Image (cartoon, rainbow, N blue to C red; front, side, top):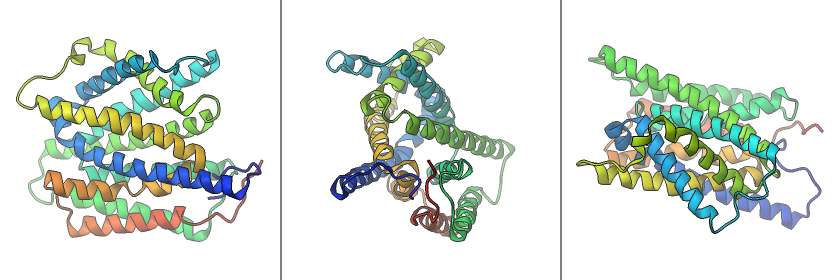
Length: 318
C-alpha cells in the first residue's frame, strides 16, 4: 500500500531490492511464527503459560548477554533510545507475550493466529485515521469478510454438546487474552515502525528481549531452572525453537520486513500464518478443522488479500 512504502527518491533497482528483501523476510516470518503456535500447544498445557514465559525470556536474556560479549549490540544507544527500547520491551515483550502465551494455552492454534492476524488491519486503520492513507469501498467490504471469517472459525471451535462451565469459561478467557494480545501487538508494531532508523535492527531485536528478561526474572526466580519430569525434553525442545527461531530469528526478520516494505505490506504476507498453523496442527497435533472452520478460514484469508493486496487510491500526506 502506498502509505507504507518509503517515499524518498530511490532508484528502481534499490527500491526493488528493498521490496524483495522485505518480502522474503516476511515469508520466513510466516513459517517461523505459524509453526510456533503448534510448538507451543502441549508445553503450555504441561507447565503453564507464566512459567513458560519466564523460562523463555530468562534464557533468551542470558543468550543476549553472552552475544553482547562478542558483538557490541548494547553500545551506541542514546539515553532517549534506551527509554524507548524499555517501553518497547514493556509492550512487546512483557505485556504482549504474557497475554499471548495465556491465550495460546487456552485456544486452538488456528483460532488464535487468525485473531492476531487482525493486527495489520488495525495498523492500517490507525494510518487511515492519521490521514496517511485511505481505503477503497472494496477494502471496507474486505474488513467485513475478515470479521465474518474469524467469527466462523472461532464459533466452529466451540463444542456443540456437553459444554461445561469450566470449558466455556476457559475459552472466554482465551478469547479475551487473544484480544489483548491483538492490541498489544498493534501498539508494538507501531512503536517498532517509529524506532526504525533510531537504532539498528539488531539492537531493536535483542535489547527489548534482554530488558524483558530482566523485568520478568525477579517475579519467580526459581522458575528459571530447567524443567524436570517425564515431559522435560518436550518442554526444552519447545523452548529452544521458541527462543532461537520464533523470538530471535523471527523478530529480526519482522523488523527487516517492516523497515523495507512497511508494517501493513508486511502484514499482507504474514497473514499466511493460519495456513502454516492449520497444516502443522493436523500433522503434529492431530487436530482437524471442521467444514465451518475451513470455510471461515478461507473467507478470512480472502478478506486479507483483498484488503492488503491492492494499492490504496489515496496518497500519503507529508
